[in-house]
Image (cartoon, rainbow, N blue to C red; front, side, top):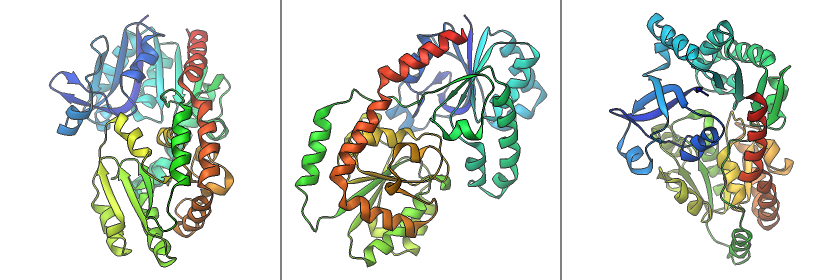
Length: 376
């Protein structure tokens, strides 16, 4: 069966070789290879940098690509013809939304009467509205386009349990199934976390952390940095560690403005296994996003027994208790939630570790494979 996966994701490329990146690695590929043959990806590409070659593996040789240098390419007649030809040669398709290539492709998918499934992984309204002034103009357009195509889609996989389903309902068949890929749940991890909490000194420095692209303002790290000054004035010694690539100049400027520069530490890009090691060293994980589907990084933190707090964006409230949620952008409310979480770290570690069990790989993959089989 000739299967085509469509999304805007930018795969690092060097000459004719494609590299894996966060969320699109070998495990991501295996999910589709075990269910479909002749796996082909239609997406974008970017020039591979040194850190991608260092931390990423090459995409498996049995996966083929058709990629474009930018989203603007899809406006060209030649590119649209190429998209239509690729769809025509495919027997079934999975379109991941939100994505511009995905929406363009759906027009040809329907025209050619090809069987398709949609994966809904985020909210375009929230993502674009919090991105830029131009984003505020595009947000309602993308929102309506996605809402309309999902409503009529025959099969939809949502990464959330409620949020995306309520905002983008479908008449077709659907399931809730996160994209997260967790290591096997290990009770020793929880015990080590509890020992770490119980042996803390009263006046120790509190390490909080976020794993996300540093250059994307909609990830919300700037609001955590603003809150550091409030916590400092209350007598807390807090260090905020940020894992991830991207341009850090904006966040550094916020840190200087709010007198918190020495309290912010940029960790750079870490390999996936190093992220789990890093999670074990921090005291509280923070998911400050302005827009989200169901954040993989937060689920991974719960899997390590991390006490965690997050904004009210997207599916974050589905993962955390109400007392650990603050209104997005409100750094003052963040400071209040932080204080409560810091007092209840042991209770939160146990609660979060148990919550992560709902996202164990074998449970998710079994549910997804059953749904894929219905689609096939």
